[in-house]
Length: 213
Image (cartoon, rainbow, N blue to C red; front, side, top):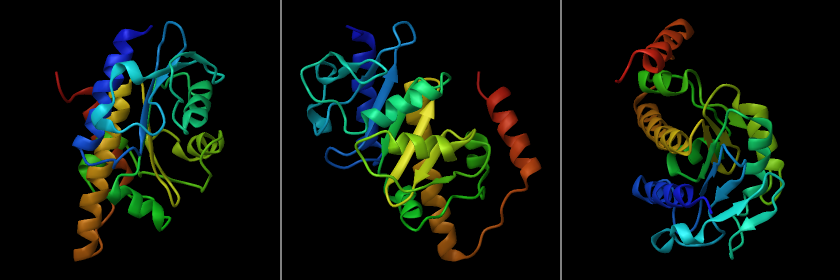
């Protein structure tokens, strides 16, 4: 079932190693089907180079397996918590991308030093609290901290991103790492200045309402 979403999810998972956001079997993406409400998610512990649409697991919002022969991701409960509390979200991504995770490791959010961050995120990339894997706990701290941002850093852990589509959530994950890397490099040279909030708002409005076709 949900063959198109299985294929989409398989394709999007290849973007994670391609953009150096994950290693080995870490990280995961899920997508919600807007018709059935079911969620398709990566299976636990499967390497990306062998991951295909047939490996994806379909679950309902309570975590019951609807279709699939493999165990779903260990982050499934947190993905589902986000979906149950954010009807606007239909894609969730989790990575351990190195530069963003470095900020998470030292417990620092990423202020708006770059116009690209203002464009994509419309504000700082916030920091969520620490939570253990395997329950809804991570989903709870994500929603406590993420606000209107599409991305949040998990203290001592990594990155969660959300989007209206799975592709949007993957884009946010890619951009989070890109911003984190550039900010880290800038901090080796000196202390960058934050972009004023009113300019961040203007940049984000232009990017979301004027930019592109």
